[in-house]
Amino acid sequence: MKKDKLEVLRKRIDKIDEKIVNLLKERIEVAKMIGKIKQNIGSGGFDLTREKEVLNRIIKINEGGFPENALKVIYSEIIKACRVVQQKIRVAYLGPEATFSHIAALNYFGTSAELIPVETLWDVFEEVSSERVNFGVVPIENSIEGVVATTLDAIYEYGLKVCGEIYESISHHLMNQTGRLEDVKKILSHPQAISQCRKWLRKKLPSIPIETVPSTALAAKWAAVDESVGAIASLMAAKLYHLQIVAKNIEDIKDNSTRFWVIGKTEMSPTGNDKTSLLFSVADKPGALYNVLKCFAQRKINLTKIESRPSKEEPWKYLFFLDCEGHIKDEKIKLCLEEMRNCCLQVVWLGSYPRGQQ
Image (tube, rainbow, N blue to C red; front, side, top):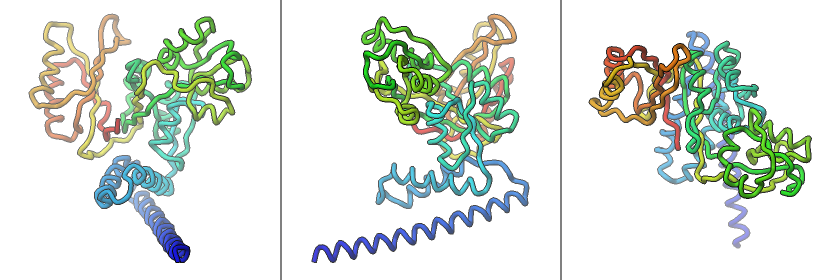
């Protein structure tokens, strides 16, 4: 009797699956029609805020019936697959495959986008600037090591827009061909990864030489062809390059995460949960920075980051990078920027974009 009931329920699931697949086919056909309309009216830009709107609506409809995190993953892939049938999205990231930038790009754009590895962070900006790709994914700050100076310098130099952000948990693993610690004669990794594992390396491998390479994945590629090399990289890198794990989670501080920017030439629409990034410079006189910060405080605009960088144009002059809550189309942000222009030498809007989930 129970066996018969089980079979009935399985057949019911089969019918539900058929309905789901047919609805997905219908959804992608509608997406194609939207793509044609966009082409006809000359609207070729990507609206990455649409995904946030759809996900928020789906979560409200769900009312907790289906596991929320799983629902977000499922619908993110559905949305991204439908977006790609309208126009193929090309995304540049710091390669090779299996870097943390690659993982961030996969999580943000999904498996349907064309992800293109490049050799340096500057190359990511160059690819986006020349419009060989639609977007780039670049690290902007780490919870332990702080800001990625190259990204700040490049966003200013290239004049691109920040279109989104994503936070990725970072776990570092030591890997080599054999999985044995005694076989590690040299360690390779990205400078930040090495810095984040410094205590573990000093304690476990104090006499082993350490060399830096442009990415954690490149370190894994070296380890795949040189049995004396131990690489500090991601689990994805170990799998991709057929390496064995010597030691897991060797970072000195747990809950390590990196914030990545999505860069492009597209301006994002407001979602109601946004960030705005700005660059500004002030005169070298008492109270100059205070006057800028007062613009935000008086309007109760929360600042989530402020960072100074030496100007490349004049010695001992500084540029300030600032993140705040809100969108440039919000009235109080508009008024704040207008007032800033009266007390700053320069104000550059870097972008307003949906806040990432930390």
